[in-house]
Amino acid sequence: MSVVTLLSDFIDGTSMALSEHTDQPSLNDYMTSAAGQLWAGTQQRRLRRNLTRQRRGPGTLFFAPNDKANASVTAYLQSETGSSQEAAWQERMQQQGVEIAPHVGDAHERQVLVKGNQRPLIRQAKAQGFG
Image 1 (cartoon, rainbow, N blue to C red):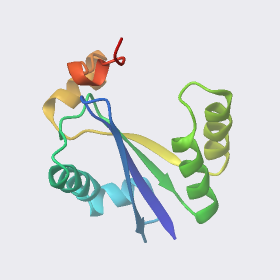
Image 2 (cartoon, rainbow, N blue to C red):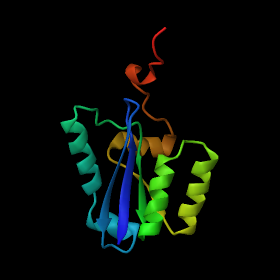
Image 3 (cartoon, rainbow, N blue to C red):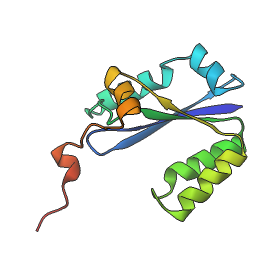
Image 4 (cartoon, one colour):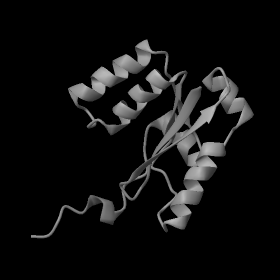
């Protein structure tokens, strides 16, 4: 069974990934049949935890057509950003037919796609530690 994962980066410096199984054969079919479902789930979970629901920019949707591809998506999401491990998992995802697309939740996120300027992190997200 296929799995769709939505990855979002928020202005407080946190990230959240939410996944669900689907019977849809492609990302396009999923988007036309269940538009906004994962984003609504993300919003609800963050609201319950009193976390910001404002993303820095668009999220990313990953459509894994089978369990093996989903395992690669999971490993990719757990790897360190910019690492050789991340690059290797990204290549493996492509080989396994994982579809990747931006997820736009509001007007500002559409502008980020066009202009490339993400919302800044809030001050607490930039904190480095104490002297």
